[in-house]
Each structure stands twice: as structure tokens, then as C-alpha cells.
Length: 152
Image (tube, rainbow, N blue to C red; front, side, top):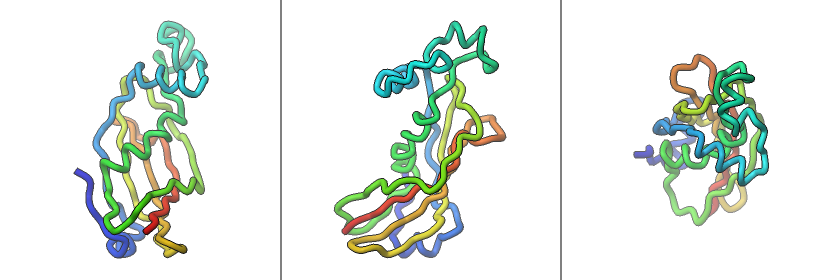
């Protein structure tokens, strides 16, 4: 269950973690579906046999943008911003890095830290410092400053 927090509670949490998602398995079917939708059919993602012999990882890896695209799903499992909002808008990213690959079959989860909360016309803007962890890995798959606007 996600943690339900108001804007005022988020303001009090600036610099602190607000929630952690459940683990999600990144299997070959997710990787293949993402490749189909995006047209990114690079063998490192979609050819398990070649990856076993030609990749330094010994298996396929998820697209970095697949990991990024999971942020919405992961956030809904970690933090619910409560209030009379009619919509939540993905306003963009300030920074984004992919420090480590997500190997096929790995489990990932996201940690959401409140970086800033500002009032904007018609609502509020929250900048989340998001770290997507790979189970058993010292390095994260993704680190991003993700900007979300919540409009009344």
C-alpha cells in the first residue's frame, strides 16, 4: 500500500524519503514489449541467445528508458499525494542517469525522496529524487530528479 501524504506533509519531508515501491520483475516479455512499442530492437535487449555469447552480462538487459517508464507505476505503489487534485502531470526531469544495467529477470524497486515542494499557479510542484534499485546490486539502475505537478 502506498503512503498517503498531503502537500503540507511533503513540505515537512523535504530532504527525506517519502516511500518505497514494491519489487517489480523485469522479464524478457516486458523487454520485448517495450522494444516493440519503441522500435528499439538492439540485440542486447531482445536476443537472449546472442546476449549469452556476445554480451559481457551473459543475458539481455532492459532498455534504460523501460526502467524510466516504470516510474509512474512504481510511484503509485510508493506514495499517494492526497488532496483535491484533478490531475497529476509529469512535468519532466531535471537530471537522469543510468548507473547500472537491469539484467533480464532482475527485480527493481524505487525509493522516492522529496527534494522540493513549491506552489505553482493552480497547484503544487514536487521534485522527487528517485532511485531505482536492482535487487542484489550495489549500484542503482536509475537516479533521477523527477518533476510532478499536482493541479487542483
